[in-house]
Length: 482
Image (cartoon, rainbow, N blue to C red; front, top):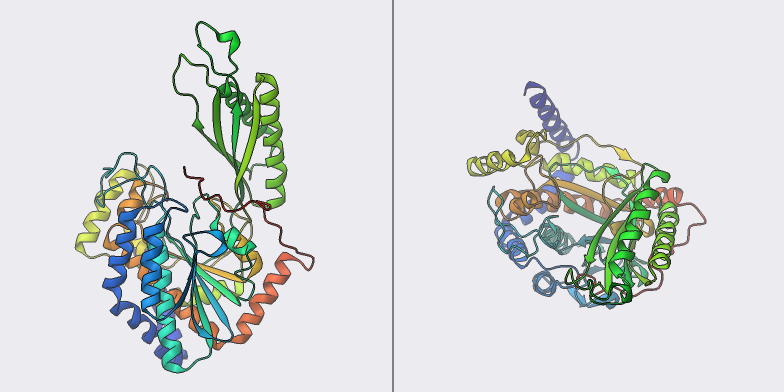
């Protein structure tokens, strides 16, 4: 505990030092923070509305309307249905350069319905839930954009703030299609954030990812009386899975392959004439993803040949790894230090303590929600994937993570859904909104930072880089959750 207090003390001392060094920035930041705080109850109500909706990717009709209506009320020009995606939008305010973009997500995850209580209890046993906190993500980004809009107006600062409503991050790759549509071609900088169980603003990469649904078609028949007349689509799926699982021995340790059987038949006494399996293929390098995916396709072709079935596959999404930008990351980290972490009141601490009982042997410290982790650069991705990756290869991009979940909470869990429906999630969301707003304001006034961020982007991606999406020319998979 003593060591933690020393760390927190150092953070606060550094924050005070930053304030003393730049009174103009301090005044500007206080303006932005106050704008966000005074609207805190509104933003809380909007986020919890979207938490209640818990709409899946490309089906977020009510969620996107909440964001679009509020941005329109605030004077933003809203363009809906961009990139052939009904729930995607762009909301813009201001004019001229620089153009600063803020990403806003709002899709939920299937099968994660959960009440806002510290013990597992589904609201709907088969329902969706915000296990990645995107209800907070969308509203927090919007809050930052609105605060910047007010600041641009009051100060007469030139430039444009643009909020991107980006659907279906969870497996649908909405941003990929927005990149393909050229919607980021004129943007100078992109900022975003993500819910987490800690506070950090690292310049970090992620895993590239390509997914597909493999469909095997055979011949249905009576499984007992006429098995010889049947050809099982499920046999094709199982044979494919067996070969892919053997393949794991011969690919790099950094590779990740996951699958679920989405259709395996309807009754045991019917030879399944159709079966489907949904695959994810990941690696830090998108070129390795392509090679591993091609091998998975060969396994599917071999499985179809061996089971006398017909196989076809549909690529669902393909994501680049996030390209880190240290220039922007350090700016974001500096502002996160100033904003600080999340402090629990007595009721929130009781909730957190009870929830933490479900973590088992996982180490955690509830006090860590107050702290900001040291800045670091992560060149090679681990963990998850995001369609922010494609954006980051086109525009210098920075991210912040804030403690919207009780420390120790895993993402994509019932615990994350529960936290997101409480004031704990809201407090973390407001930390993110303030950090993004302060960083955006800095960028409007520091053109040299924008230039440096672009120089770093060009150095990282190489002079011969040409963007080619991992999904090719396929349109948005609007029905991928059906």
